[in-house]
Structures are given as C-alpha cells and as structure tokens.
Length: 582
Image (tube, rainbow, N blue to C red; front, side, top):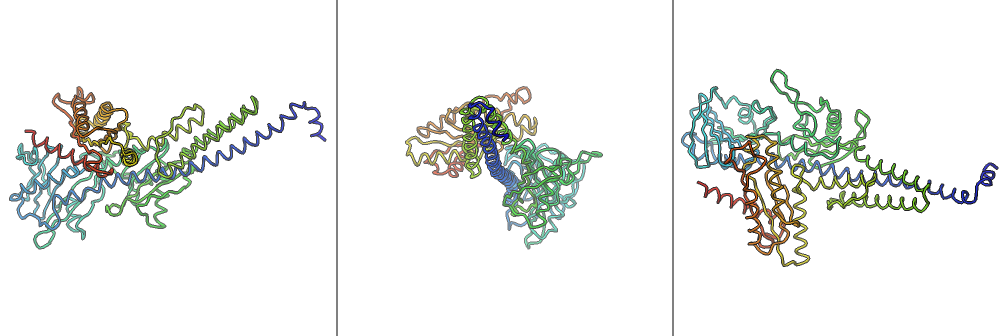
C-alpha cells in the first residue's frame, strides 16, 4: 500500500524516470565492481611481471658486475702456468699480463695483484686506460715500492717507498686462498679501510712446477655500484630493492642505509633483519622463511605476504646464479596499495561521473560509462601486453581525470622500462628491441636503404668520477647523451647501453660513407669542451670517445652480430688512435 501511495503521488515523468535512475545506479555499482576487478586483476598480473623483470635486471647486472673476475685472473695467471720462481726476473712478463688482465674489465676490476709463500708481492692498479701504479715487494721483506706507469710498455718511474710494511702472507685473501681446497674462491664481503665501501675479493691459487700451492692471485670487486644500481630501480614510491647474503647481511639496498652509522671511526655492516626500514626487514624475513622450506634458485619468483604493519606486499626474489660462487639473494618488495591506488581513484571517479550523469541526462550517463569501460579495456589490454613482455611505446594520454592519471601512471611505468633513468635516453633493452624490429622491417619490406648501428665508448669517465666526483661523472654522461641526441636525425635512436657506453641506431643510410659522415659529425660534436667540466677540470682535460660502426646487412644480419661488429670496430679504432698517440 505504501508503494502504491507513493506512485500515485509521483508525476508521470518522475515515475518513468525512477526505474531508469535505479537501473543506472545498479549499472554503476555493477560497472564499478567489474572495473575494480578488471583493474585489480590487470594490476596483479602487471605487478608480478614488473617484479620478475626488476629481479631479472638486477641479476643480469650483478652477473656482469662480478662475472668478469674469473676472466681477469685467468688472464693474469693462465691455468696450468706455474708460479714464477723469481719475481724480479719475470717482472716484465708479469707486468704485461697484469696490464692485459686489468684491461679485460677496467671497471670494476682495475686492480690485480699476486703474493707468494716467500712474501713477494706484485700488484698493478689502473687509474685509467693509460695510467697505472705498479706495487712491488720483490725481495719478500720490507715495505712495498710504488712506481708510476704510462702505457703497457711504459718504464716504471717515480718510485715511492711505503711507510709501513705490507706482508701479503698475513692478508685474509692470501690465507683463505692458500688453504682452500678450491683453486678459485671469494673472500667474505668486507669494509675497505680506505674507501669505507663494501668490497669482495676473487682469489686464484697458483701452484709451482709440481702443483704445490705457491702463491695467490687476486682482484678486488668494489660493491658500491650494486648499491647505485638498486637505487635506480624505482618501481613505485614505496618499493624497496636489495641484495643480501643468505644470513641477511646487506650488500646494497635501494633506500636507507646498508651499513650501520659510524662508531669510533669504524663502519660495520647492517643486517636486513635489523634495518630501521620495516619493509626491508619484513621482505627479508619472508624470503628467509621461504628459503628455510626449500632452497632458492636463480629463477625469479613472486608471492604475496602481509608485513608487520598489516600491508599487503607483492614480493619478487631469486638467488644469484650459484655458478658465480656467491650465496646472495635478490629481493624486490612493493606494497600492493601502490599498484592499486590508480585503480581505486579511477573507480571512485567513475561513480561520481555516473552520479552527475543521472542528474544531467541518462544518455550522458551511459556515455560516461562507455568511456570508462573503453579506457579500462585499453589499460587491461596494455597490461596484458606488458605482462606478455611486449613493451610497446606507451600511447599518448589526453585525459585529465583520474582515468588519465591511471593511464599516465601506467604509461610512465612502461617508459621507465624503456628509459635509462640517468640520461633519459633509451635503455639497453629498448635499443636491442628497436634494432630487432628494424631488422624485421628490413627483411619484410626489402628496403633498399640499409641502416647502421653505432657503438660509442667514453674514454675517461672513471677518471672523472675519481677526480671530480660521481655527480660530475653523471653530468658528463647526461651532457654526452644530449650531444649525441642533438647530432642525429629525428628518426634515429640514441641509447645508453651500459656505464659509459652508448649505442645509436641510424634508421636509414644510403651507404657506408653516409654512416662514416654521421660518425665524423658526432666525433666533432663530442670533441668540444663539456660544460659539466667547465671551471673544475684543467683546460687540456678531455674525456674523449671512440666510435664503432656496423652496417646492415654487410656487417651482420641480426642484432648480436651488429653490436659485436660495432664494438669490435670501435675497439680497433681506439687501438689505432692509441698507437698513433705519442
């Protein structure tokens, strides 16, 4: 009776409108629920893929960082070659091998040294491509004598005798290696007393003519680059990435400290379980408990857990490749609220827009719901493609509402996966994909225009970092990237490949002479003094760069071949330039 009385009092317009209003409200609730579910599922899939990608990127970078130490030691002391009987007699040969060894991975393995049972010592510290310090203790007693070297064949000069006695047989790296059953090994991670940064040393036992342990060759691996790498892994504002030893001792972390505050002039390492950052401690605890159930391997895995603050956290983790001989874990943790914040704002805004649609017009309401559905479908499709590893260039976003914010947030995630965070250039993975796409385009279309890949290596970035600080070194890399970008055409791509290396894709060239002309133009552009070094570097200080070119299809018909040829061409030209330099 109450419903009948109510309908009798309503006008016909209101009576006809009421069911549609209820229908729109029901549709709004349904669409909101579906949108939330679709967004949550899409974000869940995307977040898992992003964490796997982040863990994989860290693992690859660590492998590149530490994996070259064995090649360095093999160059210094080839397997099977007996230890020298007399360092003084073989000094020239050893110095040449050490110079070649430090050239394998000048950054970070710029120091190779050797000590034997008689207390003799020989070490070579490379300051740059041409400058080094030779450290000797030939007689097996007394302090070391330090010499300066210029070039692989340069004569030692400017000798300096150290104030204190250096006894290699008492050093931990020597004692650990000489007594170890394995010929190759790592020392425990330790704090370097000079730099106060974490360091680990790779050692190789060297035998005499009858195979008895005679000495130890070693190379130091500074770990500050690991910390710098993690700090560049910025998935979200509250995300944390870290590399830890199995017992929780931090190697590096993306935010906060990885070492305890100095006490009495000493620095000690920080355990993840004792970190003041609750997410660091909670993430390590989750992985540690997982490792206690079953050993971890190098395959990235993801799971969810709830931390001590009640937050739902998405976790990605893996063990560093056991072949490297390091029992380290890679851990990335992101509160799921970071991923879902955009979806929550979008659903709320959709409800508001639908309410306004009821007031304004039924048609407008349906239109708004149609827009919301279309936008979410496009985002879900984009999330699916990213989840499948298809990192397309993000579409341009014109909306200014919460849907636009979500779309831009997603697009920014895609761009971060394609962009080098320091220079703003295309990153290594993206340039490799661009070259692969260009190869496919060439094969499918049969273009008569070839394209070129250019490899650029800056010569003295490490020296800039050492002499003027890493901030100046970063500025040099940024300015170099800007000059390279300004020196190519709109359709060409400039990417930071690694450290102080860049790769350029010249999208279309007529012939090799055209590519060589582009190289000459860029060499001139990089030859001008850098603004980043103005007023701080000597007038005659120049960073310098080496260029290598590979032309498709003459120099290679796939990405790897083109990059190898460009790298080899760059190295050959640099060697030729060094040989011509007096």
